[in-house]
Amino acid sequence: MPSQTKAAKQAISERSQHIYEVPFRTVDPGRFRQVLDEGLWQELSANFANARSLLRGRTIWHVNSTPAGGGVAEVFRAMLPYCRGAGLDVRWVVISADPEFFVLTKRLHHFLHGSCGDAGPLGVQERRRYDTHLALNAAELTALVRADDIVVLHDPQTAGLLPWIKKRGARTVWRSHIGTDKTNDYVKAAWKFLLSYIDGADAFIFSRKQFVPGSIRQQPVKIIPPSIDPFSVKNQSIPREIVQAILHRVGICHGSVKSNLSPTFKYNDGTLGHVTHLSDIVQSGPSPDFDTPLCVQISRWDSLKDPQGVMCGFAQHVVPNCAAHLVLAGPTVHSVVDDREAAGELDACVRVWRSLSHTQRNRIHLACLPMHNFEENAAIVNALQRHATVIIQKSLQEGFGLTVTEAMWKQRAVVASAVGGIRDQIDTGKNGILLEDPKDLESFGKTLVAMLADSKEALRLGNEAQEKVRQCFLMNRHLNQYLQLFTELSHR
Image (cartoon, rainbow, N blue to C red; front, top):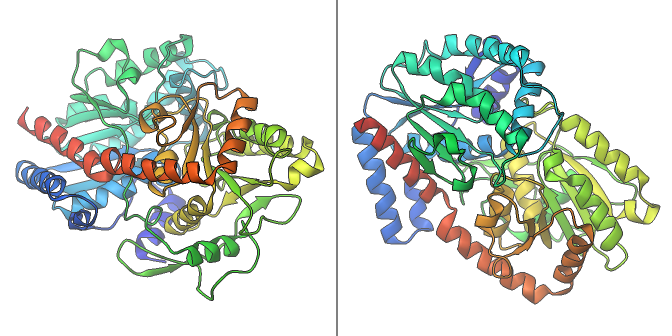
C-alpha cells in the first residue's frame, strides 16, 4: 500500500488533534492532452499559468469533514493533485468532532435536501454544540492559515469556521454540494441556522442555481457542478478480464474467470495495486455468474438514496419478468466518519431484504465494499460499474450524482431520478432515462425491464452518455472554474 494511504489511515486513527491534513500525490495536468482537443487543453494550461502567477506565496485550503466516502472526498482526491502538479500550493484539511456533532450536521444535510431526517431541533442547544466543536477546530486551522490565503469550506459541517477565517484576513469561499429545487420548512430552518455563519463569505459555490437561497443571491455566487477524473482509479479503463478477476475476488460474482490475470489496478503514479480484501455481502443464494444481467446501485447507505425503494421495486416488478440480479453496494458503514446514520440504514435494508420471498432474496445482494484502501475500493467500484448491464441512481434528493457521471463515462445505460443535479446530467431518452417520480416503483421496475430487454438501446444511450460527460463533466471544466474564481479573489 502506498505511503499516501498509510498516512491517511494513521491520521484518521490517531485523532490527537481537531484538524488533520490529508496527504495526496502530485499529478501532472499534462495528461489531459490525451482526452481533450487542443483548444480545451490550451484553455486549461493558460488558466493554470495565470493562477500560478497570481497566487504565488498563497495557500489554497480545502476543508471538509471526512477523508473517505461520499462525493466531496472523491472530488478532492481527483482535483487537488492536478492543482499541486501545476505548481499551486493546495492543502486538504479535515475537521474532527464527536458523534453528536455529526448527528446534528446530518440533520442539516437532510433539511437542506427538504427531507425531515430525524426531525430534530436546530435550537440554542444545537447551536452551542455546533459552535463548541468548530471553535476547537478553528483554533488549530487559524494557526496555519495566513492572511491572503484562500480557504474553501465545504458543506454544513464547516460553515461555522468561516467567521474565524475572516478574522485571520484570508479570502473565504463556502461551497455547498447539496440542495433542493423546492423550498419547504425544513430547508428554511437549515438556512436560518447556517446563514449567520456564512453571510460574510467572499464567494459562494453551488452545484445548481436552483439550490441558491434567495438571501444570498446578491452576493458573488458561482455555479460549479462536480466532475470526474477520467484517469483516476475509479474511472480508468480496465480490460474485461481484469473486471471479472476483481469481482470474483471480492465475491460479488462467481463462475469461471476467462483468464489467469490477477485482480489488479494502477495507482495514479502508475504503480500496480492488487485487490485483496473481500466484500461483506448479504445474500441467500450464490452470487450471480458473469453471464447474468446485473442492475447496480452504488452509493452511501443513506435513506435519500432510497436503497429500500430500489430493492422493493426490483423485487416486485423485475424479478417476475426477467432473470436479472440486483446489487446494492456501498462502503463499509463505519468508514465514513461524518455519517452516523449509515449503519442504521443498512440494518433497515437488511430487514426489508429478509421480508422478501425466497425467490426475491436470491436475486438481490447487499454488498459493503472494503475501505481498507481508498484506491482498492475505487477499483472495485470501477469494475462493478463496468460489468453492470444497467446502473441505477433512484435518489429521492441529490445535489449531484457522481455515480451517474461515472457510469455515463463508462458507457453504461443509466436509470436515475429526475431530482436535483441529475436533471443536468441526463437528457432523458438521449443519454439515459429519468424517473419523474422516484417513488413510483411500478414505473421504475418497468423501465428497468425495458432497458434489460433492449441491448441496442442500452448501447446507444451509453455511447451518448459518454460524450455528454466528455463535453460537460470532466475535471478540466471543473478546474477552469475554480481557477477563474481564485483569480478573481486574488484581485480583490
